[in-house]
Structure formats: C-alpha cells, structure tokens
Amino acid sequence: MAKFPRVREQHIAVFGESGSGKTVLVSSFFGPAQEGSYKNDLWDLVADEVGQGIRLYKNFLGMRDKATVPPATRFRATTYYFSVKLKGAEVDAAKKWPFDVLRLAWHDYPGEWFEAEPSSAGERDRRTECFRSLLRSDVAILLVDGQKLLDHHGEEELYLKSLMFNFRQTLSRLEDDLLEDGPIVEFPRIWILALSKADLLPDWDVDRFRDLVILNAAEDIERLRSTITGFIEAPEALSIGEDFMLLSSAKFERMAGSPRAIGINMSRRIGLDLILPVASILPLERRVQWQTKYDIPFRVLDTLADGAELLAAALADGKFTPVEKLLAKMPKGGKIAKAMLPILAEAVALAGPKLLEMNEKARARNDVLRTTMTQFKLDLERGVEDKVIRNSR
Ligand SMILES: Nc1nc2c(ncn2[C@@H]2O[C@H](COP(=O)(O)OP(=O)(O)O)[C@@H](O)[C@H]2O)c(=O)[nH]1
Ligand SMILES: [Mg+2]
Image (tube, rainbow, N blue to C red):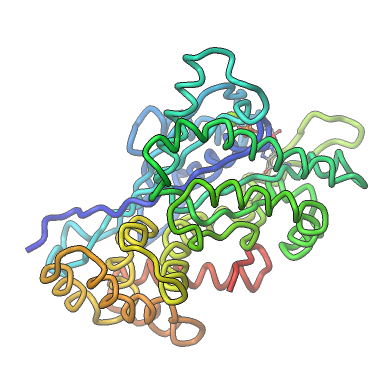
C-alpha cells in the first residue's frame, strides 16, 4: 500500500517587469480560497509556509476591503509554495490514488532584474541562484502589462520591443553562469505570453492580444526563442510565442480624472482559475506532442512534465494499475517512456462530451482525484472557448 500523501509538484515561473502585477496576481490567486464563504468540494488550497499565506491573504483583504494595493516588493525574489490538497484522501487511502497533493511552486522573479545590470558581484550571484531555481518550472508566464499598453497607445511596438529586449538581455547576461555544465536539461519549455491587468482592456480577447504581439514583436519573440534555444538540450521541445492568455487579478475601478483606485472588485478575476490547469495539464499535452514528433532524449522528457505518467493515470479511466505496474517493472529510461506514450496520449486526447462524462462519473463516485484532473482539463477547454487562453495545437 502506498504511503499517503504522495505529492506531485508543478512549478511555474512568473516573469514581469516591476509594477506589471505579479504580487497582486499571486495574492489574488490565493486569497479567494481563504475566504470564509469559499466553497470547493474537491480540494483545499493552502500555503505551505504559514507566514507567506498570511501575508498573501492580508494583501488580498487590503484590496477587497480597503482598496489598497500591496506594497511594492522591490528586489525580492520569492517562491510561494501552495498545496492543493484533495479532499477525502485521508479517510480513503484504499482508493489508491497515485497522489493526493498537487503542489504548486510559484516563482516570483523580481522585475527590477530585467531593467538594470547587477550592482555588485553579490547581486549577480543572487540573480543566478534565483534563476537556477526557476529553471525547474515546466511553464513560464511572461507578463505584458496592460497598463503599459494603454500608456503606449498607438506605439505599443516600443513597449513590446523593449520588454522582449530586456528579457533577452537578462537571459544572455546569465548565460555563462547557467551554461557552466553544458546545455540545460531542465528548463521551462512552455512560455506563455500573458496580458496582465486585462480588466483595463475590457473588449480584448486573447486573439486580439496575440495579434498585437505578433504584429509588433514577432522578430523579438524569434530572437528570444533563439537565445533560449542556445541554452537547452533538445531545443525542438520548446514553445514560445504559441501560447497566450489574459490575466486580471481584479476589476480595478478608477474615479474619472483620478489616478487613485477607488474600488477593487476582487470577485472579477480573469484567467486565474486557469493557473492550476495550465501548470498541470499543459506540460502533459506538450510532452505527448513533442515525444510523438521528435526523438527526444529520455532525460529531457522526464523533466519536461515531471510525473506525467501519474497525471495521465489520474485522468484516463482505469489506468492507475497499468501505470503503476509499468513504473514498478521497468527501470527509468527510454523504454518506459515509449511504453507510456499511448497512455499519456489517451489522457491528452480526452476532450469534449467524453471528458465531461468522465468528470461527472468521477464526481458521482466521489473520486476526487479524477474529478479534479478532468475538471482542470474542462477548465482549459472552457478558457479556450471563452478566448481567455489560446494554445498551440
Ligand atoms: N487594473 C489592474 N491593475 C492592477 C492589476 N494588478 C495589479 N495592478 C496595479 O499594478 C500595481 C503593481 O502591481 P504589483 O503586483 O505590485 O506589481 P509587481 O511589481 O509586478 O509585483 C498595483 O499596485 C495595481 O495598482 C490588475 O489585475 N488590474
Ligand atoms: Mg511585486
């Protein structure tokens, strides 16, 4: 009998210049799940470090009740650890869920680091160190600030180009340190461009955002891609400039003529419910796509979507046992990756009415794990339909 809880850990890295909305975003991701009125019969969202959780909730309450924004977090790199704890696992370990906690590590990279050279050797080391920890993420979200787009109305190109340029510069500066041991195996391979503060552009959908970025900064994205290509092993497993999403932490309502926020409606969020689905489902999908198309070394596949087998087993009906058997029987390596591919592909292919049906059945059976995983996939489908997210196909 497996020991519970078994934890699957997914990492996402959030990059954005200072003021682009990172701290508010993480507060708004976490806060609502702590409200007394919050209901979720599938899981609890908890902060692994109590102090962090309190700070984020306080940020959230400040916005909700006092319309005050969190203090700027300059030059501070933080990793927030959240656990999505599935309900009912303790009482029913016999369900043999392959995991019952999904851990999300959210890396917040200080925006100032994009904008200025390190001021000392010590700071340079800190940056490299921080960046190394970000590399464990499968997914990176790069924020495009909606406020800056408004400020640059008519010359969005200037802003977008400088954003991409700064970002690429930052990476290039770190190149020597990061590449000490040769091409990097574990590196975020899914780069999502996200419009933050999307509430400021209420009539925009994700297609419009994408068109703007491509029209004005296609070459810059290409340059960023080639920079990253130079960093990593198996660079065909990389998507950048293919995934886009809208994010808004709240509806900020401003008084006419006054720059001061007068109301922050925390119940009007955009895209935040897609964070967990993006962190858990997208890497699995991409892994299947890349593994099918290219000959990718196992060590890359294995880091590309850690625990993909278990996620797939949790999604596709009746697959726990075969996956567990395979994992127990075979040594880690290319052979098992090949044997697993059809199972992963089956899980990824679940969609539409079939997926909904599985979700409903799992819910009726009180199979919280499968309900949650199929729900994440449904949420992503819904996000695509609503034009909040757009993924490469
Ligand atoms: N309209 C709007 N404004 C936001 C949103 N998120 C953040 N802001 C504004 O942007 C400012 C900077 O956000 P913050 O999260 O501190 O940026 P960070 O430096 O990237 O951490 C906040 O003080 C808010 O005024 C959002 O979703 N919508
Ligand atoms: Mg901040």
